[in-house]
Amino acid sequence: MSPLTLPNNYDRFFHEIKEQIRQTQVRAALSVNRELVLLYWSIGRNILLQQQQFGWGAKVITRLSKDLSQSFPEVKGFSSRNLKYMRAFADAYPDREIVQQLAAQIPWFHNCILLDKVKDDTERAWYIQKTLENGWSRTVLSYQIESGLYQRQGEAITNFDRTLPQSQSDLAHQLLKDPYTFDFLNLGEAVQERDLESALVNHMRDFLLELGVGFAFVGSQYHLEVGEEDFYIDLLFYHLRLRCFVVIDLKMKPFKPEFSGKMNFYVSAVDDLLRHPDDNPTIGIILCKSKNKTVVEYALRDVNKPIGVATHQFSKQLPEALQGQLPTIEQLETELNTAMEKREGEGK
Image (tube, rainbow, N blue to C red):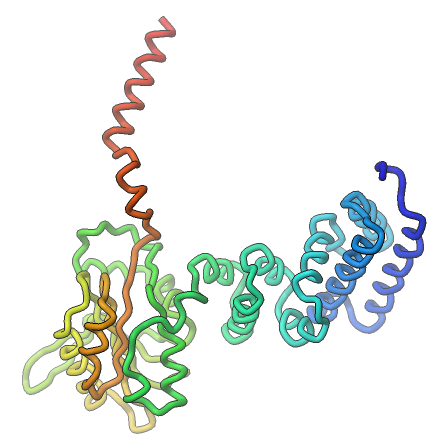
């Protein structure tokens, strides 16, 4: 099909789409999100059907974009790129009822992000639900997807099923992730625990985003006096949905069984000294450099306070097989200097 040649039934198809848009404008303004998303799904579905039945190519979308933009100059959103998103949207959600229940509940450009970044239907539905629950912006949604939140959610090892009521246990377990990624910190591998704690406090906004919605910061090196001795909690939070204090202990080394005993002490002290009668039991989270699943499970088996163990990482590291193949900074500098000297020599 040449650029100027259109299928015989194109005019009828175009006028049907125009009528769909006019009817939607009567029912609700296109700025109303639900109607807009459903309209885009309908347009995308019609484009798909025409392409499947009559073999229409991409050039028709270009022409359709131009005609719709001329017919509705006051309405943005009929670019060729957006029409292709509509087609992809309809392809990803064949069932209109699913669109009504899920995708139509979030803004259109949130859906475009999900189409670009998430291919699995179940995972996409999960991110939609979390967007609704937490009110994520497009930027936050992109960050959560890129950080692999779906894969990390609920991966921490805990004893919550034995130490918390089921309703709180399920929610608490879902809120924990593993690993926690601290990509927003510029720290080396030799960093000490107090350095990590200070950096997290200085980047509290980013840290709260990584922890998830509901965490309220109470303090760092939070002082407790027990038996006339002084103790200091690395980080203390209060979770608004769980309605409980959350103690976080930072470790720059692999998990050791004695860490659970220390956390059990902190949680008990917070329960006695800070917990309000209406609060739920305090939860402890141990963040380590790494962990052995079996060791953690043994360490938590007979602990009677709710504790979870997860890992943290500063950045996504290269596979070990590639690390040795990359040049060092010194090698790069040497090669760069050699190249510049050679270039200067050639210019003389």
